[in-house]
Image 1 (cartoon, rainbow, N blue to C red):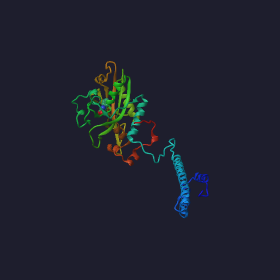
Image 2: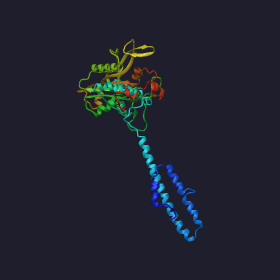
Image 3: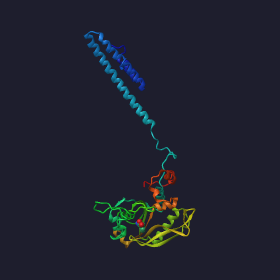
Image 4: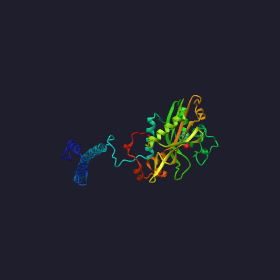
Length: 352
Ligand code: PHE
């Protein structure tokens, strides 16, 4: 044996090591430039050829053995370091959020949560549909004739190269069609979602949000429609005895159709909804046109319904005193910090 230590002792010595520094020290002790293995190889020079051969072989076997267990031990140390790190970095998802660093909920999302909550209490359920719609769902089934201005290029984003003449939906009304084709009455839904029109200025954005409402049963009336909307708006704007008016209007998919205005006053340049001498248009509505029911395979002699649609940005701007529509879409963190909502403000959680 060339070396004083036996293999078992070395093995034990290396296996006991639990830091990279100590391991490196041992590596240098055995294999470093001045380590005992290179030194013993140097020592071979003075030996006879025979001795060089046997001793040389012995040293090399020993060297391989030491290298191997050093390598093994290094891997063990590395693995235990990773395990330790993973353990330290564990995130307890059940801890309460750190409010100071948390993001904020966008006012549009907050408004949607709010709308869902109010209609949820009235037993409405939430339906959704795709942003890309067929021409049939967005127009034809809704009794919007071919020559209707809403179909013209300046309003609608058409998608090229598809057989169904797909469009980016211009309103949430196509989800009325989808729901009626899928379900039998009674139907009682709201549909919050994104809508698109090729229009962009201080009061129009090419992408905006609407919420649609649809009730179909055997006895829905205009009075139900009216009381539902008044109840919703009083809840939403947190006002009692809301002053409002219904004006006759025209939508191809409702008959009769109306637009609803709410009264407001301007106090210190801020709009206060509920009373006053000014009127603000807030939504469109009406009794579902029997032609639409028939297009959706619902017997219009048995069933009737009402529908309404409103712009979520407008509701949000009025409720939270936001004056510029475009600020909703500017991704300005300071704006969001000011107008956004804390996660804990929300009673209703929704994936929308
Ligand atoms: N879809 C109409 C619009 O975008 C709103 C509406 C919905 C009107 C339902 C009546 C009934 O303007």
